[in-house]
Every structure is written in C-alpha cells, then in structure tokens.
Length: 85
Image 1: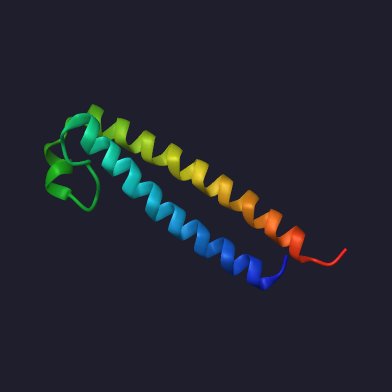
Image 2 (image 1 turned 60 degrees about the vertical axis):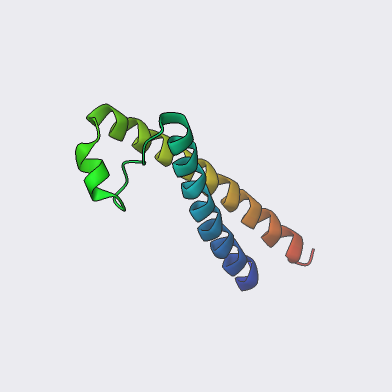
C-alpha cells in the first residue's frame, strides 16, 4: 500500500474517532440529560452509577470498533485504487 494512502487512512481514522467520541458524548447527554462518565470528567465518573459507566464504555467501545473497521476498509480501497494494475 502506498505511503500517501496510509497517511490519509491514519488521519481519517483519527478524525473519525474524534467525531465518533463527540457524537457518542452528545447522544449520551441528549438521552440521559447527564454528562458522560469519561476520563475527561473524573468527578462525573466518580459519581456515576457503575451501570451507567459500563453502558457508556460498551457504547464507546463498539462505536470505536466500527469506526476503525470502516476506516481500515476505506484505506485499503484507496490503496488498491491508487496502485497501478
């Protein structure tokens, strides 16, 4: 795979990951009316019910896995289309 395709894939993965984290946090706020229990909010995480922390972790992990899989497939597709036949 060419270096440019790898760099674009890495950048796309990072940006998609950030966007996904923002989306999950936003949906959490909208759904629960509370701040998400993340490491960025240690006081919220400490006060949160363990069930809510686990649910947020599962949702975040699942969305991160999907984002990673999609960006890897997209990067491979770019790499194949940019290589001469």
